[in-house]
Length: 121
Image (cartoon, rainbow, N blue to C red; front, side, top):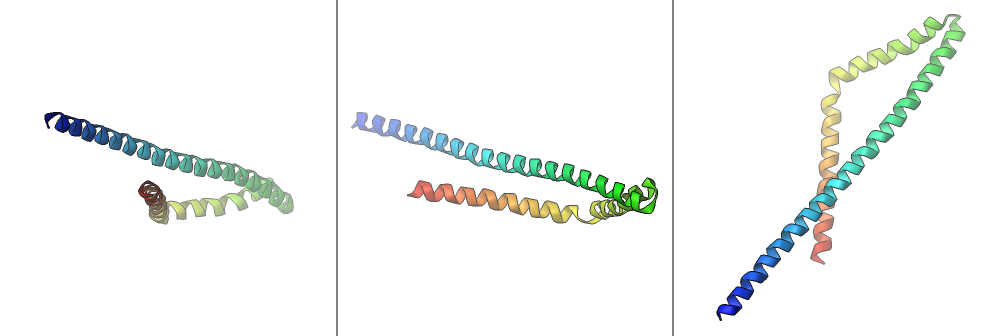
């Protein structure tokens, strides 16, 4: 009887250790998914920013040629971008960060639900 209680305690201890290991693996999987998602988005935004920079530069050159003075081309491209930047800084960060927060929490909850469903099978 005493031996079966010790064996039950060992089994319970092993089960708890395995459960903690499973939680750690699951958490690292979710974290690695989120990090890869963030890196992918940052890389895409960086590439789009570089492309937009070159397109704006080309547009400024073209408009400068049309207006006869390169300064006017740069001003016609730079001023609307400056106004958009000011508008962006004054109004939209709460909206964008709220959407990012919702998106990340949805991804995390979906990933956890999928893991739970896979584990329950």
